[in-house]
Amino acid sequence: MTTRATRPLVMGNWKMNLDFVEALHLVQEIGVVLHHQPLEHTDLVVAPPFVDLRTVCSIVESEQIPVGVGAQHVSQFESGAHTGEVSASMLRRLGVTWVIVGHSERRTHYAMSDEVVAATLAAALRAGMNAVLCVGEDEERRRGGEHQSFVGAQLASALSGLSPAARSVVTVAYEPLWAIGTGVSASIEEIAEMGTFVRATLDDLGATGSRILYGGSVNEDNAGDIASVRSIDGFLVGGASLRAASFLAIGRACDDCYAGKR
Ligand code: PEP
Image (cartoon, rainbow, N blue to C red):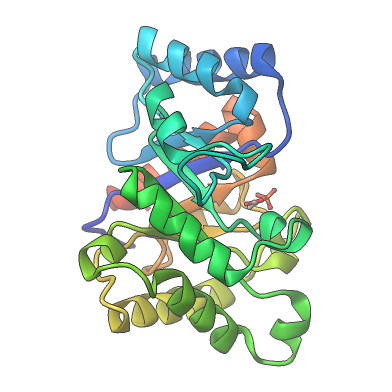
């Protein structure tokens, strides 16, 4: 049984799924359930594709749905000749208050380097956004026993340009690449080990207030056990965030855990 000082956070990363009509339906469904059975302790955020953000922000505001809205990526630049990019201030203007920075799919498929991750994180914070910084090792590094050194270096690099105060508002999502989208999450022992390691590293870096999320094949069946890991303050959820029932069940597992009901 775990009691926590930090409010858990569950963020749904919809990736490149759901057009704006489908997004509208999903967020409305989430809203109907939450209005009847609100979560007491857990913050929920949805991160739809860019083209859905305006619709989702409007419905969240007009129907007072208790979820935050996030983007899955943001430019490191403020404006100008950056075809295909979207700036943090443009997102803010829409009412988007969260952003995922350095997701492994951006790092792997779009060559997002540690330097660009650091610049993007700084740009998001400058614009007053809440950032979820993703870190995590691939299978090869895990097999080679390099998971801690690799994740430690990712954290140090991403936070290097920030003041101690800015570091502490960053939420960190530990997402081992080998668990993302595979249907097999990391084990409780692996999550506990890395959660403790990330917390110690953040303390060393002066980021004492950061929330730590776990991501990688979280679903309604494993969320309760993972949520009870002391160092974990919630989840970044991919596939299971595309259905209201599973996303909300994961949120409720965090809520129950926070309230010490488990
Ligand atoms: C993710 O992409 O951040 C993720 C955790 O995906 P999934 O939950 O589908 O493994």
